[in-house]
Amino acid sequence: MIFLKELCFLLLFLAGFCTGDDNELKLNMVGFTSTPAVQNSKKTIIRGYTLGSDRSDNITLSIDWLDNIGHLSGNQLCNNSNASEFAYVECNLVNTDFAKYRQATISCSNSGCTDNARIGVFTAYVEKDTRIATATIIVHHNNAYVKPIVRAKTVNAGDSKVTLGVKKFNGSENNLRWAKDGTSDSKWDGLKKIIFDTITV
Image 1 (cartoon, rainbow, N blue to C red):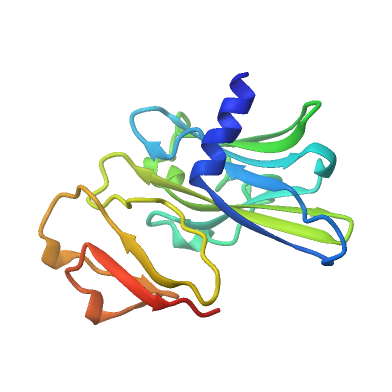
Image 2: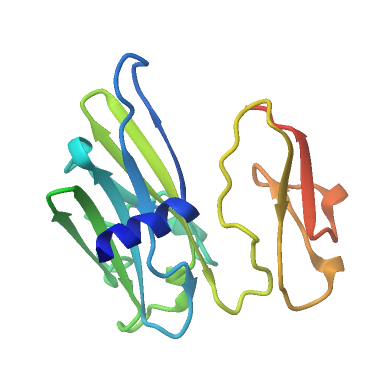
């Protein structure tokens, strides 16, 4: 029962996509964190689930971006050869009747590890046969100056009036900045909410 509750939470908050031959079933996988807002706990859990008949051992967890630790972007969380950088990460593959998932526990109990190592954007990636799927896992700090209304939003090309926004934050609205594809756009400076008239690929 607890496991099913976890999956429900996961599906509400995280986004992913899958690819494959249209004649095949799409690959069924999701990404999950039990710690979406880092507080005083000393660890963050990142998981990549493969479900039902799509269970796979070929699950990879990686770092897209870490707070103030940009040089680690693109690195795997598990089975990484750079032991000194990843000494605080423990990984294991769990197999149940319904799912297989790879779990990374990012612990800051070791010396040299700070909260920055637990805050950022992570990816779960899976392959099975000719199909692949990915899911994004976002972790922010509970005391962040800016908090998103939702941490991920899935849209389609052609969708209109798509809104992104932030809620409670500390500081002046004038200091808010937005970036798209890694580039800041001054027309959004100072806005708590931005709107995309039409979504393109």
